Amino acid sequence: MNFRCECGHRIHDNTDYLPYKGYFLADQDQDDLMDEIDDAIEKSGPTPRDKEEAAMRIRSLITRLFKSAYQCSNCGNLFMDLGPAGLEMFRGVDPVNKNLLRSALGEQWRGHVYGEWKDILPEWQTSHGILYNETNVSCPSGESAGNGHYSDWEALERDYYQLFDELKNRNAIRYSQLEKNGTLIHSWSLPK
Ligand SMILES: [Zn+2]
Image (cartoon, rainbow, N blue to C red; front, side, top):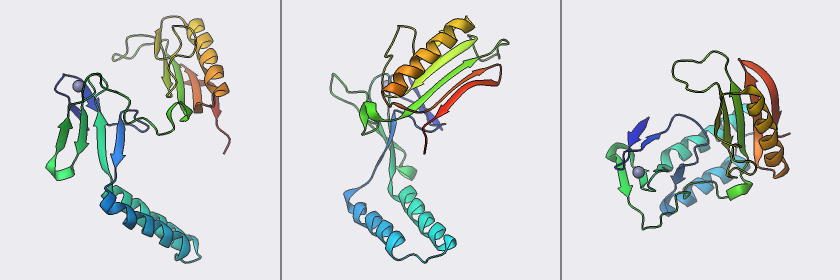
C-alpha cells in the first residue's frame, strides 16, 4: 500500500524493516498480550504442533492489537492507521524529529547493506550501480558511501567494502550483499 502526505511525499509500505513505520499498542491491550505470551510458554502442550499453535495465537493477537504508524520522512507528519476508520494525521511542532519510528535500539539496530551493479539498465533504473545503507548509522565514511548511485563498478565495489567494514566493526549490520549482473559477489550474515 502507499499514500500521499499533504506535503506531496509518497509513503510506501511494500517491504520489511521500514525506518519510518512503527506500531502502537494501547495500554488497555498490553496485559492481554503479556498473558497470551505467558500462557504460550507455561501452558502450551509439549508437541511441536502445540508450540506452533501457541505461537500462531500470539502472532494473530499482535496483528489484531497493534496499530501501524508511519512518519513522512520529508515533513515529519505522523500517521496512525486506524483500520476501517482510515489514516489519522498529526502535524509535529517545528523542528520535527523525523526519526520517531526508528528502532528503540537507535544506531545499535542491526540493518542491511546492499550493493548492486547492472551492465544493462532496466527501464526504471537510472544508474548502473546503487549502494544502499539500510542501517541507523548515517554515511560513516567517505561522502559517496551509502545510498549512492554509481556509473563505475570499481568505485561501487570499493565503497561497498568500505561501508561493509565500517558498519560491521560498529555491529550495525545483520546482512550485507554485493551483486553484479545477478551474480553474488559478496555476502555476509550475522551468525545465529
Ligand atoms: Zn509530508
